[in-house]
Length: 95
Image (cartoon, one colour):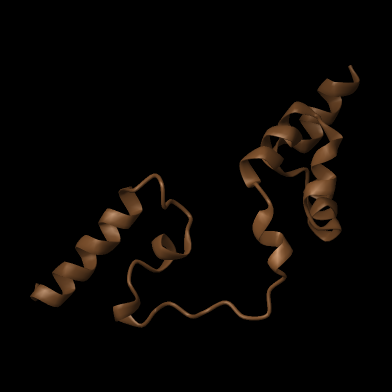
């Protein structure tokens, strides 16, 4: 393996093992130098403030306030497909 490929693999591995960067833009690509990262364009900046761990926790607790934390279309899909324990949480919160 040449030095460039080794260096890129080492960077990607380091990013993947760094818990503070898990799921971030940097971790997803593992390195711009290999030309696999494309910028995201045309997104709604208000979605950047969504705290997914908090949304998930509220869904799993049966707390209906999670629905105001995500776009309406996302809430509809979660409920329609019973994602993230939504149906179970609903049953438990009404019991």
